[in-house]
Length: 335
View 1: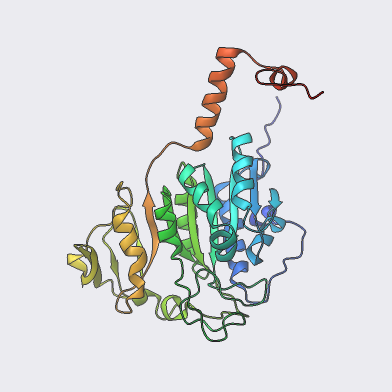
View 2: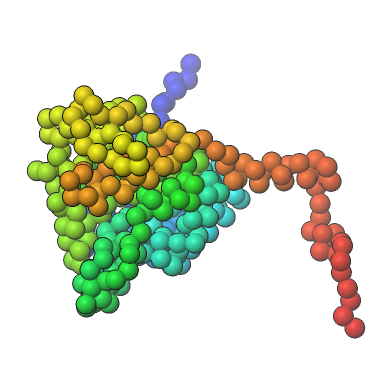
């Protein structure tokens, strides 16, 4: 009788490469990398069927540090490469890692089309509200008045709200988490990977050199309970250290109320209007910063449609030959 040897479960170290991790000491990217590697180990994800795709920026070093397949592409074009990978290999688990500049400035058009097409891809958007790799210029998410090297008199651009951008592009899954809350990030990652379609997770990420603690007034551990509300499907929108405060909708606004009066949150509603309101409410200093799941709805995936059309064409016309395709139809001879 032959003993069956069960394979050992993978650990976090099994998802780490031998490459030196090169971010500034204290950068929030370390925490995100640690959380993703731990999540992969806890859920036993197949390294041989996983691909990480990135563009340009501090976040885009990510593929070097994950023991999976990966592409470090060009500025703003991670979405285009990730789309090609998924359409050509629908069985692969594809992750796109990007930043607020890479995804929303030079890559904004590509990101929008990735979201509306709804490929089954997970997008991690690191948002530190600054260009870190190129040394501290303002980014598409920097608040008005941001004084940096490229805006010595203060930025006059109105910033993107990444969650609202995603909702406007018809994203089917949108969430927000924080680099220094690993338990919350793991919960959001789990929900994102369970979703069939494009999952966009905005991760508020601290740049210790050029935009240190930009989010501290909301997410530091001492104030997080009072300054953030976790949007959990099927749960009341309650917050506060004592869970005694809540939020409810009043027409086209969101207002504070008691925990007992708080509305139950439903990210599965087809209209993105309520999620859009919640995403923008933190501009009011009296309201908390929303994190958690803003939207989770079903829609057809782009790659499934492509595969179905290819199979239908083959069934009707039989497998073709490339030479016949080139020399068929409208051709002409240059004399």
